[in-house]
Image 1 (tube, rainbow, N blue to C red):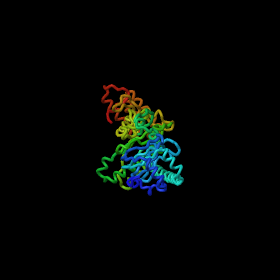
Image 2: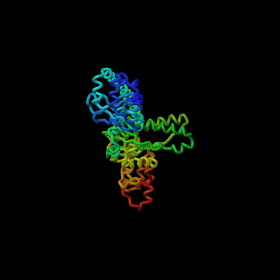
Image 3: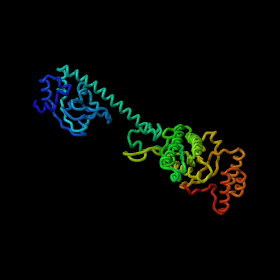
Image 4: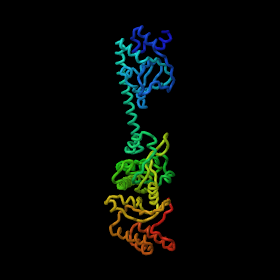
Length: 428
């Protein structure tokens, strides 16, 4: 054994070799092979036969289990000994973290030396205990990182989306998407663009986040999922990725509670002289595509489809009708009895980009007599008798009846135009 090899091996720093008699050490070194490896090189693969062990002369290596880093080993360490002693396949993959020099010893040579050197066997046991402790520390740290990542991810999507995403291990599975029936709630907080001229950027951002925080809390309460924050608007879904037996009802109740809390919040802002904002919401129920969009390298959870677009269009119509919320006929059909009793069919229309008409429903506190009178006036309107409908709407108090009375007047001017039994909106 040359002085150079002895220097490289540095047995004084190796617990296995430092206690070997010189004759045994020279025997082992004589049968060993020195390997020079580079960063990223893999010299042990999980599942392969345990045909040798490795002493690390210098450098660091990374231990991977199932592709996940579980530990490190440094100069003076030994790799692969337990597989050799138990005649088991490699339990992990070992990769170089930089320039590494190894001393490879064949399995039968290593076992023969261990059998003849009790001190070496004792050191093996001590080293295994250290490895177990080190691996446990790594796992604890990884566990903390997973919890932290889940908390961050949980601020972006609901726990249900998180569980659905991590259940699909491959990017191709997440990108495939699924067709599901769900309720879509499009909630808009209006006036932030104009307020930017009066408020500084920090107060404006705080006001926006305060509003979004209220909406987010209500969506979570009703087991919905916020898919996206679109500026000062919120797109939330109910019924996917986890099915809900009352998805439409959950969406409507979410809106009602969020509106009540936001109204109280606005009262406080008015009392303190702060700027207030208008609200608008559109709710629809139907089939949509749910899943990740993007690429294998970068993706986000989203929902797509005509039913999503309809919810956005309904929210846009609240800028014209004197109401803060409009929901579709398909949403109304899915509602439980108590919410149906509160709902009012205020119009039928088509929206831009959609040929099929839908009933426009809203939630307005009206005495039963006014509600019945509105239903009768609406039937005259839908049948095309605009003159009689105008007169009937005129007898009903409130801004909605006044709005529909003006509509009837408009349509009387266009009397020669074909009336299909619904109004056609061309605005977004």
